[in-house]
Length: 394
Image 1 (cartoon, rainbow, N blue to C red):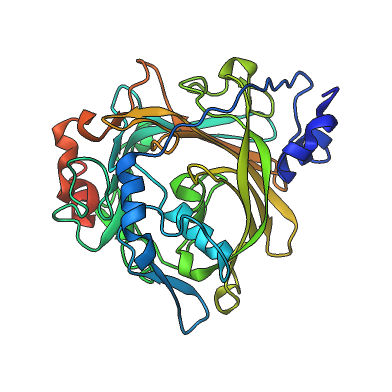
Image 2 (image 1 turned 135 degrees about the vertical axis):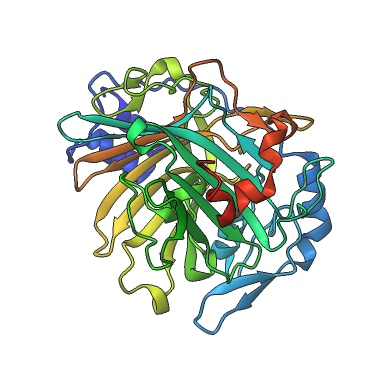
């Protein structure tokens, strides 16, 4: 707290707000951020090879409502050297198609968690099993670009509650499609009803008991990108903390409370080069949407989100988010920042509420990636289709 202003030019706006202490959520008096050297984990050679092979054939098309979409994309970074016109949206597309392993699983010994914190310091946590799968545009060695049985889908996320007991077996399936103009679908399995039901496509601002919405998913942003504009505000350097391992696995004891900031024991911060994007709903679809704008700080090297400032429909600062990608070694590809695991911290500045999520580490750090995952998670029907949700309690 004594010297933070000397370094604020390397801080996102929301981080500065926490240091200034003008809201309920503010930096703890003992906050300390030790800065170390930047560590670059090269993107997979196979992903870069796909970038070189296909980038020239990826084109932008304008839709009747004024939104943008892609044609010709086959894998890798769509726009490795984004330039005008539509430079900001091209960077958003690069974020959307950033490298991710084709399969990421946490196990019953390493349940994912999300915990909420209110102004009275009450904590409520949910833990569960999580399966992320990329079904199209794969570049991992030995994996088909399109997974048989997954045609037409880009990725799926499957999550089932294990704790608390009264919510056990509640499950959700999120499906993102290869056709960007096809809206993402979310299905929820409710144990009492014994069947899966679709979530309305109009419910992109609905909360699931936390401070995040469906559009905040997929490690920072999960909105249908043809429905959004993206303007590049600039390129700069910000402080970010990565390669934290399992440091934040237990909430709240591993966190610097009452804010829920990372402790110095989590590791050193790095100075990262980022794009700063202003992402908003296109005018034709903006009415009734919860966020007026989303300011995203995207790492220029691996294209993941490191921080976000979220504004309400009146353009008042509403939420800020610290996103910490966890470096994990992907089999045959080496350590990656976009590994399918991260710790997320969302602070609702207006409603004095906060949400924290990440992998729980009660039995050693064992997020399983690609061929490390048990064969049972290769069941495409069970983990990527609405019908598979109906098998949850069998």
